[in-house]
Length: 510
Image (cartoon, rainbow, N blue to C red; front, top):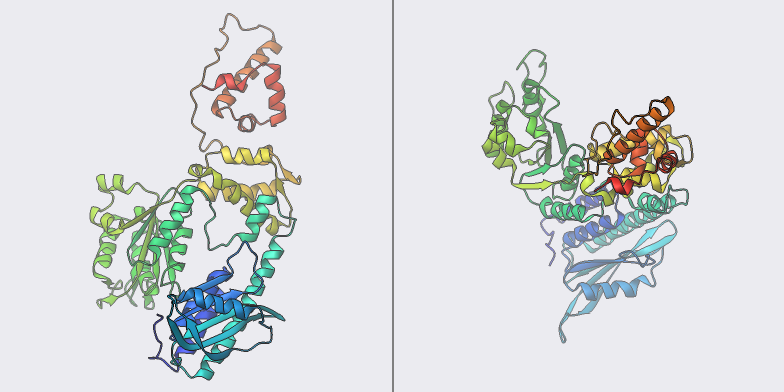
């Protein structure tokens, strides 16, 4: 049963209306907003349960939400009401007897209902079931429901319109169109098994108070995960404060973390709060924690242990309630062994580790990411580029040492520099020299000996060209589009030369 709000009969509804307004402003997922608003209202009205039923939802989408007890019976009540819901309807209250979940058992109480109304359109209905009089005056409760019904209805109507606009047929491809319509910047793009496991870990860890350590290569999206953890937590309405520990020298880092008093050092003309104070009751994201100096590690450890600190130049202890999320691409275990990172701090941070996979470990997510970035940069540059299957194959096969960050930069350069309407493999600006793919076991083609080399210039040039073709194929692991990029020619030109020199790529790769 939902907790009664009887302790705040006057301020409760207004505070909860402000919470729902904040949800609507901050959430980009309309259906998550519905669920959270329903829970908020059942709590403030001391209700046994509640439900939302949409009037004309797509069969592919969720159209019913419920919370509390007797959910099945309350949803059925909503289904009966939604058929007659009108855009100009008002919130109502009536006494009813609700059938229990077991035969012969009933619950007598009051049903509060309100239509979810957009502009000249009824979106659905919200039903709240109370066993007794709500802890606020009935007129106040109905007025509150009227406001919430209008706000949520307009929110749903706007979200539906935005979705239809994004799904217009000028998207870069079918896959990109689907992504452009459904992508939420607060969500993490990825449907691979690895990313589904990561998302499950995020949901599990979000509501805990435990310190979380995000690990993974540079560019894997650690800050995005940190923000997701914050927004899924009970602290989501409090500050999310971030600090890159590698971006500042030790003296400035201490002031940034803990703040300083006026006159603490030259240039400290006024008292300044640090990141810990700014993040009080919220989340502090410490990026690149592995690059923090040993002296600063000691000071951070003390704060984690005692939950208080002093500003630089101050002597008054300041207590804070901060949830720490740290991130690093450093091998902390190796750093501990070499005494570059304190072992006690390592154990303080390594409470809930989440390891983010590199892009090459989840290649099946690359087309979705490319589709999103392509749609985004097309819009920014007023272009309508599409990507060919050969170019997509080349992108998927690349190892991406810079991970998602490198992929994003690659797609942006591709959109800016490509002059044709369809991106071809030669338009994909991959930095092959930064991270060449590992050499496969190859059956080496013996090079001609000095005695057998032709003396004429055309034959000598042909022999050198053949050697370069074989080397490129070996380096690319047999991927012809990648070999063509290495040689600075098109895949079609490469195919012609392979036929000319009778080179079969499959015979080169073991």
